[in-house]
Length: 214
Image (tube, rainbow, N blue to C red; front, top):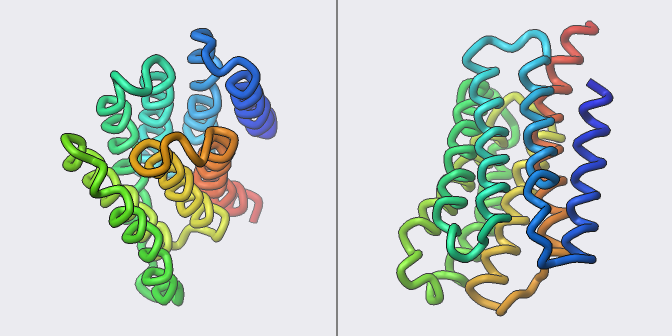
């Protein structure tokens, strides 16, 4: 498992480096998909998950890899298919968190604080969405729901933080595309994306590794 952890980090750094140095290179797709697929492998191998829990997390990571590949091939022309792939990934993650809902959680008070972010982003980007209004707003709702379910679940703070950072990374991308003409750039959104997915996925894995050693 430590090896998969290292592979994720190594290829995330490699992809970010390639994009910063060679932003227009067409050969980065095989590099970009490695972190999410590595996470999928780690989730598949972790002990203690029920089949449905495992399927939800693995499919979530695989759909993220698909979104990575699609958007790296053509971020403009394939924007909607890439968005749909990530949306399906978030639905899968949301299913996992819903299955682990904590009815006694004390984190309910964090939900209104978190919702300030997606509501603000929605208001800011809405005027510029045009024909993309429906898919983008649907995506914003689903990823926000996924994070709310993470907050209200039994998962640890690492996974919750990952889901929040995932929203932050997508917020950066949305602002760059629909509001601020390319800013904030990939030097901020890419590290946030890989960090968010890492914390979300490996945070869940840490829960099961802790149980197996107890």
